[in-house]
Amino acid sequence: MKIMHCADIHLDSKMKSRLSQEQADMRREEMLMTFHESLEYAQDQGVSVVLIAGDLFDKSHIRKSVKDKVKQEIISHKSMDFYYLRGNHDITDFLDEMDEIPANLHLFSKDKWTSYQLTEENIVITGRELDAKSTADVTRELVLDQSKMNIVMLHGMDSEYPVHDNSYVIDLSKMRGRYIDYLALGHIHSYRWERLDERGILCYPGCMEGRGFDECGKKGFVIIDIDKDGIKDHQFVSLAKRELHQIKVEVEPEDGLDEIITKVKEPLSYTPEKDLVRVVLTGRKNMDLEIDCDWIKDKTDRGFFYMEVMDDTRTKVNYETFAHDRSLKGTFVRTVQGLDIDEEEKAKIIETGIRAIMEGSLIE
Image (cartoon, rainbow, N blue to C red; front, top):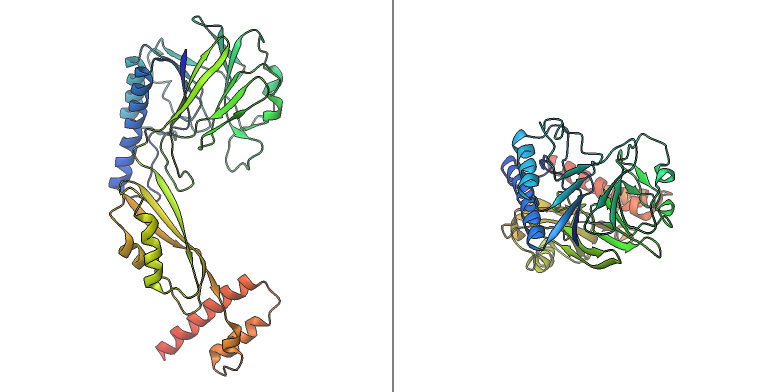
């Protein structure tokens, strides 16, 4: 039996933090299309079960057209059974507005573990929707038959990672030794496949489309081939319309703007124009060099869907140059040099101060 495992699709996300309204609208439609094409791909591969491990939607107010399209996707792919476990973003009225739940859509409860026995194989799918406000240890109530092939679905953050939102924290140590063969997780937006224990595998498939520069790289879903004896094969599949790239470019103190532009152009030459790009300038720059990120972008943008340049360089201060400088600039540098603070903080203060001094001299 082939099973598709996806999560964190975040349909109808606003996408407007960096993009224009036109670009945001385009990305929202592309995310819907990726969802559709992923189901088409799964159907062509003979998938009979789709696990949606949370965050199918992004927010409470979802356009009716989007909800209708998702419902139609489920109904039209009647050869596949959908097991939808809502995540912390799934607070929409998607299910409430349905006159009738499609026969091939199966849901889970927040109050207790829900299990579904698959008739074709000795496989049981068990899941529970988690409440971030709850302090209850739901793993204590998880009882599985060790003679079955057990798939467990949850949406939450691995306790080994920092938590920044209202997600439920899953203590994976408490999931070990519980006869789990495949732990189908959602919430972390990067692909992760590893052993849970001697018997089982855990997997975060990641999101289907990257939305921000904290979601760079290939995005997609997982297809597993499983039977009563275990997982025979697995495949990570990416059908994303666009990829996000964060490219770091090392700056040297001797570099001028022309040299920096040359360094930026080199990695961009390998980046598809349809993608979204962030260039981060790192390293150390000359104290007298003012980096104009917009100008560098204009000189290096090859027509990417979106591009930005960020300056994360540090300033190299040659204190010997100012040792005998009697100007206001020299006096300022020597004063800061004597402060009991770290070198990076000194460099930031000196850079800001000299810029203010130079601007003041121009005004005069």
